[in-house]
Amino acid sequence: MSLSIRNQLPGTVTTVTPGEAMVTVRIRLSGGQDLTSAITRDAAEDLALTAGTAVRALVKSTEVALAAGRVQGLSIRNQLPGTVTALTSGGAMASVGIAVEGAALTAVVTKEAAEDLGLSVGAPVVALIKSTEVSLATP
View (cartoon, helix red, strand yellow):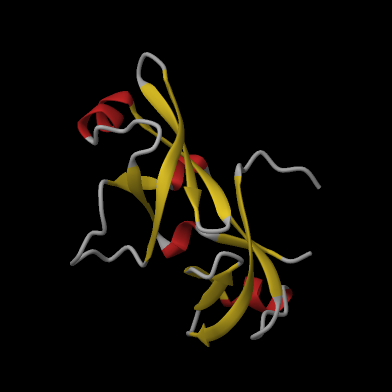
């Protein structure tokens, strides 16, 4: 299956915490970072997720927010530090390539946000991803 989702991060499930309708899944990415996904309980059961399960974390580029550094006091669980590797700006939007430890991400933000953050190739950046925006796939 081919997908239009640019961000496909390989990892391994470390913990599955079930709730009544939703499940949080903690994933160790190949670069060593931890990522949290919040999916429905039915989806977790369909994927047979347990500690040790190999998965791909899927995140649309429009769901990746950026910050100039780590942010404290924020409900967003996933903060991945990295370096800007590419920056393409259009009239309204900018596509930002980011190298994080062991993976590559793409974020799409407004051109104004990219300018306000002073983004340029080589600049440090932190990718922010809500756990509810991380989908999971098994091989």
